[in-house]
Length: 518
Image 1 (spheres, helix red, strand yellow):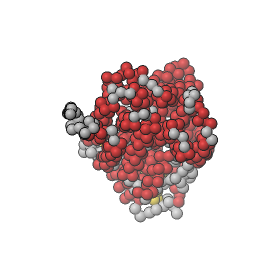
Image 2: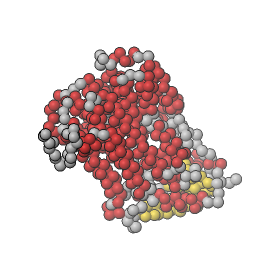
Image 3: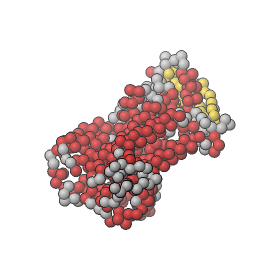
Image 4: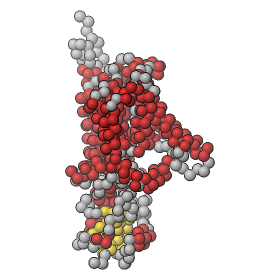
């Protein structure tokens, strides 16, 4: 009887000749266990690091004081979820990090399930899910900060699963799920709409899939999606000017030459698309290096479909560049679209019918390296700041200034008024029972009446931590517009060392107290 050969990677072999190591790597249970441990570790790491909030974290904490149909230039799904988590578990950094990592974990699960709908070898769904780690926007940037983009990652993964399940195995449940996924995706980020639009165009180009558009159950999907997006859509109708102007400021440059503007738009689109997926393509090419030519030629109905979705998505953005004046396309903006890249490459592997285990092992090794590098970089940039004197947002001593604000609030029914949303969110995190406002309320929200309080405690700063502007320069116009006279407030400039920073490096805040006449 011939004995199976052993290799260092194989260890021992089972009686059927398959390696126990290979069996573990092919297991969905292993995938989900590793991912769960990874995201729990990232959550724990965030709690170990300084508790200053990044921009998006602070925005979520600030906005979570209210449950609104809309807040800013982004749809409200993440805000609603954060509001619910804070209501259940309390306002804390754990609640912030917990929601983000739960959504990211769920994204990988739905992405895995999406791949399972269309790969012949179901084990390849693991390759697709791990492929998400090769996208810097998903693996690194989503952990560093970002909130609405995290929601978009979740929404796009859920939509991909629902879409491919509906197309490959249509059922009443699948159409309900498709409606939920489309509606949920629609309130993650506005550019998500490009994904279902591109999917529709791809279906129209496929003779076998085209009849599915006539399925009556699609009406149920539409009703469900419409019900989910309607509350925000009504809000958007009333606040479209303010919302769209902020969004277009990010997308439209100031070049008056249309030809130059188009070149800039197409250039940034090309560079952003390459930056988004280049690492993914390189890693897949390395992991399947013996079969690159085969992979390039390999195709089946699903590679063609997903490929068309990607092409149509980019084509729609090109139209926006040509006819809507879009000049700046950031890689983050492409997330709901190009997130299908690893799935497309996995489908190419499936179509090529190449041996599974060598590439799978390499993908796992690569994923393991990334899972070590991402938290190491996130921690390292904070831990070394005292030596580099290059401080991040979370190094700013927001806890110290919050204690100062709390001491000034004592003895009166007080409201806190801050100069910016990040400062407001950080104070709110440390003083969760306080009402913390900024000089700019969420879009469409009626301003809170300051005169209903006995005392206003003001907090402001200069973004670089230098001595802030005077109280009058920061708040006088705001108070005047509300009929409040700034009657000699008690003003102080306070400075604190950066958290995990060099003692000599200080960050300054302005604090003022004004008691209102009763």
